[in-house]
Image (cartoon, rainbow, N blue to C red; front, side, top):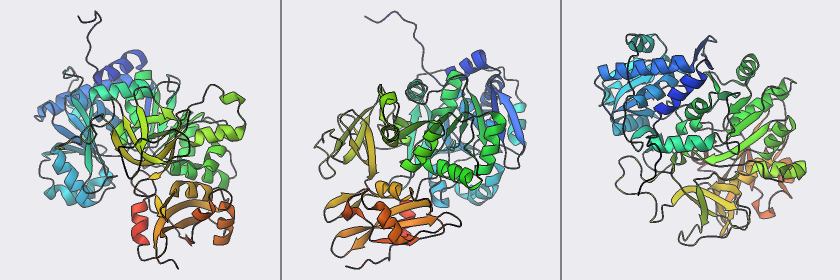
Length: 529
């Protein structure tokens, strides 16, 4: 016997239909690189997406074909999210900051048929076009081509229908060994993830939210903001230039109350405001961060400014949000330091996600949730990857557990605390040292702008930590001062054997510290025995 409720396929087009119908006049704003701004709204965006459906059909694009974008954050890019998926195609958001060989590989592996790109990446397109073997059509977002292309249509179209389990988006992750791997999102998984994202205990979005997602649209499903903002009718503001001064100006002009970005975004924003002798933008009430552990000192600054922090953990393979540090029932009874401790962790699993940690050497051995034992973090749920795109085998075990590559501990109350990546953890004398905790302790020094810890080969201990530090302009700190600062905050045997000061620490395309590049840079570094 079946239930007696209406049977609706959960497809992404339902989101834009709802946004246009119930929140049609809510704005979507773009500030371009040249400082100019353009405005649309949810109703107009739906109309443009339907025109794109017609335009794609005119190009011969069929259900399941891949339509790629090579672009930053802006309104026309958002149109393509709903236009491509609404046409039954799979939107493939390409990271323009990847190496040429990676860009060639993923476009060919995805078998993209259309590429829509920003003029800023024209040089990449011209250089790689001869190597992209499947792309038949090239359209530029911001030189008038995209507007003319969809403008030739009348928008009298229908969304392509089908199963909620049809694929709708493809995003490659380079956080794995070998070639980048494709994560193929379903309509269903995105809708379920959207329901979770908008909950008060998660991203806490509503129709009064004015959101500036600094996280790139090509990264990890854009943290679900294109879908979640449509679900609640939030205002979206996009910015092509994420310089802190530009962000502060835009935040003030548009009354932005909700900002989302990796920890380096918040570090640069707080440091800019401190250097200018000004407070953080007073309109900001919500800060969402993820991608790496947020330093405790930065969390303290944001909380003292009255900003509610949503410290999340996830990855492309989890759509991406899996956990978030929301306030427990007794949060208001805690001291400020206790509250910061809660927010410095990665929070609890959302409904729909399950977590566990297993022994680093023996994945069959599940470890206790005692807040002390670290292990390899595994996750499962309806918006968690089962198999990489074109993969021959599932990348989960028989019970659906996916190995995240993170090292973590889980507290007795279920709170997740990341301690490292399995490939970044420092193994010294058979014991594990958390590079993340060293880094977060180091950036508490007022003269430290950024810090990264990596393992360096050691003749006796296998590996010992090297701390790499960027100083704030006009300020100074010595290696001895940093070691004194760390003393008492981390175990004595965790203290770095050396500190190196550099002008810049390399980052990935999404703003995370690139430990891979740092290890390559210091591969010949020698520590005394």
